[in-house]
Length: 330
Image (cartoon, rainbow, N blue to C red; front, side):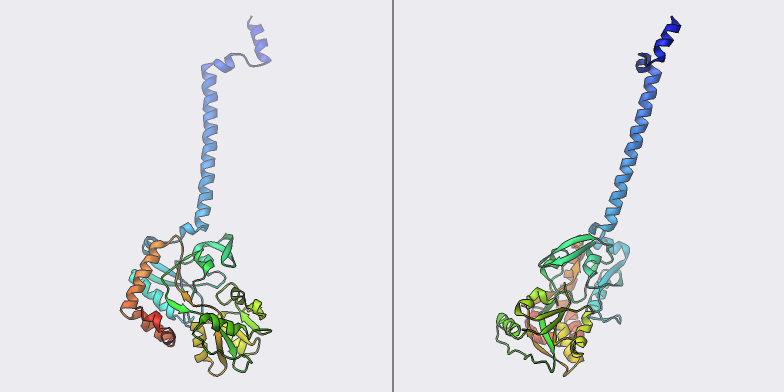
């Protein structure tokens, strides 16, 4: 009988394989360990993915508390005119340095480029497109505040937050002194002045830096039949390129144009505006609202006590004369 039972069991599972207490416990134990192992592996995978996302996303940008905890404020800047001179000073360098001092943290300058400044601040690699942008990837965040004569453009405000406006701005057409273009006579209407400039641009070569406020396409100069050319050098090299004869004219914003007139007297002339009035400001990550609020309070105090106008006059003495209404708000 035993032999018969063994024979039957040898060909397959008997009821004892399913109902025996010891076997059942072993099966449950193995199953539990397997499930537990899978669960742990899954959780570790999730944590790894989240960690990678955290390191490459805007969420890891420092707000006010994190800046104070680290003890350093990282200033993203580009060597540009008298905003960031490259010699350790400049309007924006002095202002951000004072802001860091007001927070009782160390100031640190982080050099960047026009192509990378907003990626370095936001953690997003973007491609500007009209008044918007396309996200093309992630980037490492390298700074807490960007300040380098940044114009507040529509596409930029969708990516980062700007401070209260710090300077008035406008984009001017600057030409070589011997160019056939004639400086306009101001009419009192910005729109009419812009049209007066555009009417002279048929077949004229205009240099600009694409995807910045100095992009001729942004002001549809191609529709005025201008010969729009992309300039691959730095903003500081635009006027020298015009003086050397690489083009009849180039776009410059007001602060830089005024500085250029002083730097190269008699070699260039301002034809007139190609844009309406604009504003400049300091940029912050969208995840740093408290840091931006702290800067706005700091900036208002600097305006009230005369600190700001003093720094502006130091680096751009003509600006308060051109735009007295902006500074009269102080």
